[in-house]
Amino acid sequence: MSIYAPDPELKQQAATLAERIGLPRVLQEPRQGTFLVVTRQGLELCEVNERKKMKKLQVDFTTAAWTLRLQRVRKEQLIQAMGRTTPEKSWIIDTTGGLGRDSFLLAAAGFNIRVFERNPVLAALLADGLSRTAQHKTMEIAKRISLSSGDARHYLETRRPVADIIYLDPMFPPRKNSAKVKKELQIIQQIVGNDGDYDELFSLALQNANKRVVVKRPKKGSWINSMHPSYSVQGKTIRFDIYLTGSLKNQAF
Ligand SMILES: C[S@@+](CC[C@H](N)C(=O)[O-])C[C@H]1O[C@@H](n2cnc3c(N)ncnc32)[C@H](O)[C@@H]1O
Image (cartoon, rainbow, N blue to C red):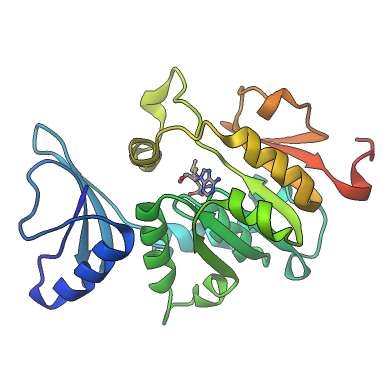
């Protein structure tokens, strides 16, 4: 993977980013493979396959599709999985940031989010997407999100943070019908592989969440760490497993 900036005026920006995330900067557009492109419209992840077909990925919360989705944010199963709580008074740690879609939905519903992404390329794409909400009506949503590039386990281990809810959406091996896996998810999968160490993250989450841990799973996927959830919220293709913690732990459903 490398970084490329076609515009001479953006070369310094590309060099700074390359140094920060530890990637080589190249002077010509790579003919094949995966690379980051610094443009005036933001940071793009490009993938060129052996047939020279290019796929592009950018984090952009200002699109018409996002505007539409945000209008119905309260109906999202993700938001329902957070329970009956006052979002504005609640802190969520999103331990698996990815492209930030779940964090953005949660922030749009009013929650305050601390999000971690340990893959530096994805963290850079997400930071870029959040920064481009400036001057846009979604800016107020982005202000509720604080992004850290790093492993959420280190934070949970060393800081003993105060969080009402801890959210996990780890990358699992692709399912049999992987053809249906969305383009974005495929690209993330290629970059980060599978998050095989989620068991430790989940244990730390259970120790640190004041109210609940919410885990996103494929609809028919097994429970994380084989642990029976307090209850689940079912979607069409996915499921949210909710583990009540603290004084709510023994509440019956
Ligand atoms: C399936 S993706 C998450 C997608 C995300 N929920 C979204 O809405 O875009 C999983 C991501 O979690 C990240 N991740 C996994 N374990 C992590 C950890 N311990 N700390 C920080 N990031 C982690 C991976 O690098 C990957 O980008």
